[in-house]
Image 1 (spheres, rainbow, N blue to C red):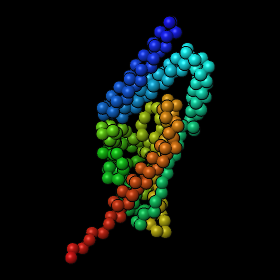
Image 2 (cartoon, helix red, strand yellow; image 1 turned 45 degrees about the horizontal axis):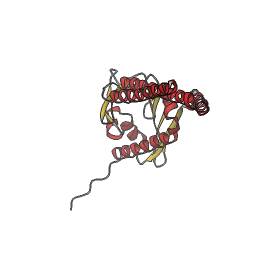
Image 3 (cartoon, rainbow, N blue to C red; image 1 turned 180 degrees about the horizontal axis):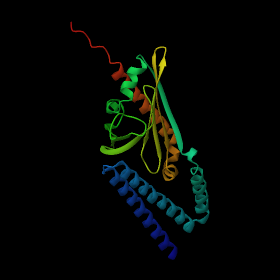
Image 4 (cartoon, helix red, strand yellow; image 1 turned 180 degrees about the vertical axis):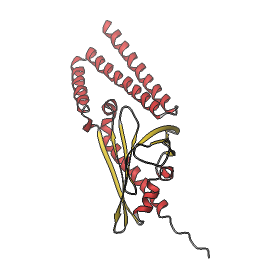
Length: 241
Protein backbone atom coordinates (compact mmCIF):
# COMPACT_ATOMS: atom_id res chain seq x y z
CA UNK A 1 0.00 0.00 0.00
CA UNK A 2 2.77 2.41 0.94
CA UNK A 3 4.61 1.51 -2.28
CA UNK A 4 1.52 2.34 -4.34
CA UNK A 5 1.14 5.68 -2.56
CA UNK A 6 4.79 6.54 -3.26
CA UNK A 7 4.42 5.63 -6.93
CA UNK A 8 1.20 7.64 -7.20
CA UNK A 9 2.87 10.67 -5.60
CA UNK A 10 5.84 10.37 -7.96
CA UNK A 11 3.51 10.07 -10.96
CA UNK A 12 1.59 13.20 -9.95
CA UNK A 13 4.87 15.05 -9.40
CA UNK A 14 6.06 14.03 -12.88
CA UNK A 15 2.83 15.24 -14.46
CA UNK A 16 3.04 18.51 -12.53
CA UNK A 17 6.65 19.10 -13.60
CA UNK A 18 5.90 18.38 -17.26
CA UNK A 19 2.86 20.65 -17.27
CA UNK A 20 4.91 23.36 -15.55
CA UNK A 21 7.69 22.94 -18.11
CA UNK A 22 5.21 23.33 -20.96
CA UNK A 23 3.63 26.45 -19.44
CA UNK A 24 7.00 28.08 -18.75
CA UNK A 25 8.19 27.29 -22.27
CA UNK A 26 5.05 28.79 -23.81
CA UNK A 27 5.30 31.91 -21.65
CA UNK A 28 8.82 32.59 -22.94
CA UNK A 29 7.60 32.94 -26.52
CA UNK A 30 5.06 35.61 -25.54
CA UNK A 31 7.73 37.97 -24.22
CA UNK A 32 9.82 40.38 -26.29
CA UNK A 33 13.33 39.91 -24.91
CA UNK A 34 15.34 37.01 -26.33
CA UNK A 35 17.31 36.69 -23.07
CA UNK A 36 14.04 36.26 -21.15
CA UNK A 37 12.99 33.67 -23.73
CA UNK A 38 16.29 31.85 -23.18
CA UNK A 39 16.00 31.93 -19.37
CA UNK A 40 12.47 30.52 -19.48
CA UNK A 41 13.56 27.84 -21.93
CA UNK A 42 16.32 26.84 -19.49
CA UNK A 43 13.82 26.76 -16.61
CA UNK A 44 11.53 24.59 -18.72
CA UNK A 45 14.44 22.24 -19.43
CA UNK A 46 15.27 22.01 -15.72
CA UNK A 47 11.68 21.05 -14.92
CA UNK A 48 11.73 18.45 -17.70
CA UNK A 49 14.99 16.94 -16.44
CA UNK A 50 13.56 16.84 -12.91
CA UNK A 51 10.53 14.98 -14.28
CA UNK A 52 12.78 12.38 -15.94
CA UNK A 53 14.70 11.95 -12.68
CA UNK A 54 11.44 11.23 -10.88
CA UNK A 55 10.44 8.75 -13.59
CA UNK A 56 13.69 6.87 -13.01
CA UNK A 57 13.09 7.04 -9.25
CA UNK A 58 9.61 5.62 -9.80
CA UNK A 59 11.09 2.69 -11.70
CA UNK A 60 13.67 2.19 -8.94
CA UNK A 61 10.84 1.92 -6.42
CA UNK A 62 8.58 -0.33 -8.53
CA UNK A 63 11.05 -2.38 -10.61
CA UNK A 64 14.54 -1.85 -9.14
CA UNK A 65 16.43 -3.73 -11.87
CA UNK A 66 14.90 -1.74 -14.72
CA UNK A 67 15.27 1.46 -12.72
CA UNK A 68 18.97 0.76 -12.15
CA UNK A 69 19.52 0.18 -15.88
CA UNK A 70 17.73 3.44 -16.72
CA UNK A 71 19.73 5.31 -14.08
CA UNK A 72 23.04 4.02 -15.47
CA UNK A 73 22.05 4.90 -19.04
CA UNK A 74 20.94 8.37 -17.97
CA UNK A 75 24.22 8.90 -16.11
CA UNK A 76 26.37 7.94 -19.10
CA UNK A 77 24.18 10.01 -21.44
CA UNK A 78 24.60 13.07 -19.20
CA UNK A 79 28.36 12.59 -18.84
CA UNK A 80 28.73 12.36 -22.61
CA UNK A 81 27.37 15.90 -23.04
CA UNK A 82 29.54 17.55 -20.39
CA UNK A 83 32.51 18.37 -22.72
CA UNK A 84 31.78 21.50 -24.77
CA UNK A 85 33.04 19.97 -28.02
CA UNK A 86 30.35 17.27 -27.81
CA UNK A 87 27.68 19.98 -27.72
CA UNK A 88 29.20 22.15 -30.44
CA UNK A 89 28.60 21.90 -34.17
CA UNK A 90 29.59 24.00 -37.16
CA UNK A 91 27.55 24.54 -40.29
CA UNK A 92 28.93 26.14 -43.45
CA UNK A 93 27.48 26.58 -46.94
CA UNK A 94 29.13 28.14 -49.97
CA UNK A 95 27.97 29.48 -53.29
CA UNK A 96 29.53 31.26 -56.26
CA UNK A 97 27.92 34.58 -57.19
CA UNK A 98 28.25 36.11 -60.63
CA UNK A 99 29.14 39.48 -59.09
CA UNK A 100 32.32 41.18 -57.79
CA UNK A 101 33.15 40.72 -54.08
CA UNK A 102 32.51 44.41 -53.35
CA UNK A 103 28.96 44.17 -54.69
CA UNK A 104 28.21 41.05 -52.64
CA UNK A 105 29.76 42.41 -49.43
CA UNK A 106 27.92 45.72 -49.82
CA UNK A 107 24.66 43.82 -49.30
CA UNK A 108 25.81 40.92 -47.13
CA UNK A 109 27.60 43.13 -44.60
CA UNK A 110 24.84 45.75 -44.50
CA UNK A 111 22.88 44.75 -41.40
CA UNK A 112 19.86 46.80 -42.48
CA UNK A 113 19.55 44.45 -45.49
CA UNK A 114 19.42 41.28 -43.39
CA UNK A 115 15.60 41.06 -43.22
CA UNK A 116 15.53 40.90 -47.03
CA UNK A 117 17.54 37.70 -47.29
CA UNK A 118 17.88 36.09 -43.84
CA UNK A 119 15.07 33.82 -42.70
CA UNK A 120 13.06 34.80 -39.58
CA UNK A 121 14.70 38.24 -39.23
CA UNK A 122 12.19 41.08 -39.13
CA UNK A 123 14.38 44.09 -38.34
CA UNK A 124 18.05 44.84 -37.66
CA UNK A 125 19.32 48.10 -36.15
CA UNK A 126 22.81 49.23 -35.18
CA UNK A 127 22.72 50.36 -31.53
CA UNK A 128 26.32 51.58 -31.31
CA UNK A 129 26.75 55.10 -32.73
CA UNK A 130 28.80 55.45 -35.89
CA UNK A 131 29.71 52.91 -38.55
CA UNK A 132 29.69 49.15 -38.11
CA UNK A 133 32.97 48.05 -36.52
CA UNK A 134 34.44 45.45 -34.18
CA UNK A 135 32.62 45.69 -30.85
CA UNK A 136 29.47 47.25 -32.32
CA UNK A 137 26.17 46.10 -30.79
CA UNK A 138 23.27 45.19 -33.06
CA UNK A 139 19.61 44.88 -32.07
CA UNK A 140 17.82 42.23 -34.08
CA UNK A 141 14.12 41.37 -34.12
CA UNK A 142 13.48 37.67 -34.78
CA UNK A 143 10.21 35.92 -35.48
CA UNK A 144 9.91 32.73 -33.43
CA UNK A 145 6.69 30.69 -33.51
CA UNK A 146 4.80 33.72 -34.80
CA UNK A 147 6.09 36.03 -32.04
CA UNK A 148 8.72 38.76 -32.37
CA UNK A 149 11.72 38.52 -30.03
CA UNK A 150 14.46 41.13 -29.69
CA UNK A 151 18.02 39.79 -29.49
CA UNK A 152 21.35 41.59 -29.30
CA UNK A 153 24.48 40.69 -31.23
CA UNK A 154 28.05 41.93 -31.05
CA UNK A 155 30.49 42.27 -33.93
CA UNK A 156 33.37 39.92 -33.09
CA UNK A 157 35.38 40.54 -36.25
CA UNK A 158 35.07 42.77 -39.30
CA UNK A 159 37.34 42.94 -42.33
CA UNK A 160 35.68 45.31 -44.83
CA UNK A 161 34.45 43.53 -47.95
CA UNK A 162 35.93 40.22 -46.73
CA UNK A 163 34.58 38.93 -43.41
CA UNK A 164 31.96 39.73 -40.77
CA UNK A 165 31.54 37.64 -37.60
CA UNK A 166 28.55 38.18 -35.30
CA UNK A 167 27.87 36.62 -31.90
CA UNK A 168 24.41 36.45 -30.38
CA UNK A 169 24.43 37.61 -26.76
CA UNK A 170 23.07 34.68 -24.72
CA UNK A 171 23.85 33.22 -21.29
CA UNK A 172 23.61 29.45 -21.69
CA UNK A 173 24.84 28.70 -25.21
CA UNK A 174 27.08 29.98 -28.01
CA UNK A 175 25.78 31.29 -31.33
CA UNK A 176 28.03 32.71 -34.05
CA UNK A 177 27.33 33.78 -37.63
CA UNK A 178 30.23 34.15 -40.04
CA UNK A 179 29.90 35.88 -43.43
CA UNK A 180 32.81 35.73 -45.88
CA UNK A 181 33.33 36.92 -49.45
CA UNK A 182 36.38 35.96 -51.52
CA UNK A 183 37.34 36.60 -55.16
CA UNK A 184 36.54 33.78 -57.57
CA UNK A 185 37.21 33.34 -61.31
CA UNK A 186 33.45 33.48 -61.90
CA UNK A 187 32.83 36.39 -59.53
CA UNK A 188 32.71 35.81 -55.76
CA UNK A 189 32.89 32.80 -53.46
CA UNK A 190 30.37 33.48 -50.69
CA UNK A 191 30.50 31.55 -47.41
CA UNK A 192 27.77 31.66 -44.77
CA UNK A 193 28.76 29.64 -41.73
CA UNK A 194 27.92 29.41 -38.07
CA UNK A 195 28.95 27.80 -34.82
CA UNK A 196 26.36 26.61 -32.35
CA UNK A 197 26.98 25.23 -28.88
CA UNK A 198 24.07 23.82 -26.93
CA UNK A 199 23.77 24.25 -23.20
CA UNK A 200 24.30 21.11 -21.10
CA UNK A 201 20.61 20.79 -20.28
CA UNK A 202 19.57 21.30 -23.88
CA UNK A 203 22.10 18.72 -25.05
CA UNK A 204 20.89 16.15 -22.50
CA UNK A 205 17.30 16.60 -23.69
CA UNK A 206 17.77 17.13 -27.43
CA UNK A 207 21.32 16.00 -28.22
CA UNK A 208 19.99 13.05 -30.21
CA UNK A 209 18.66 15.60 -32.73
CA UNK A 210 22.07 17.11 -33.55
CA UNK A 211 22.34 15.53 -37.04
CA UNK A 212 18.85 16.79 -37.93
CA UNK A 213 19.67 20.24 -36.51
CA UNK A 214 22.84 20.40 -38.58
CA UNK A 215 20.91 19.53 -41.76
CA UNK A 216 18.18 22.04 -40.95
CA UNK A 217 20.68 24.86 -40.36
CA UNK A 218 22.49 24.00 -43.60
CA UNK A 219 19.23 24.04 -45.58
CA UNK A 220 18.21 27.40 -44.12
CA UNK A 221 21.61 28.93 -44.83
CA UNK A 222 21.52 27.65 -48.40
CA UNK A 223 18.07 29.19 -48.90
CA UNK A 224 19.32 32.46 -47.40
CA UNK A 225 22.22 32.59 -49.86
CA UNK A 226 19.83 32.06 -52.76
CA UNK A 227 17.73 35.01 -51.56
CA UNK A 228 20.91 37.06 -51.25
CA UNK A 229 21.82 36.14 -54.83
CA UNK A 230 18.55 37.60 -56.14
CA UNK A 231 19.32 40.89 -54.37
CA UNK A 232 22.94 41.14 -55.48
CA UNK A 233 22.25 39.96 -59.03
CA UNK A 234 18.54 40.61 -59.76
CA UNK A 235 16.93 39.02 -62.79
CA UNK A 236 16.72 41.33 -65.82
CA UNK A 237 13.40 43.09 -66.36
CA UNK A 238 11.58 41.73 -69.38
CA UNK A 239 11.14 44.23 -72.17
CA UNK A 240 7.67 45.23 -73.15
CA UNK A 241 6.52 44.11 -76.56
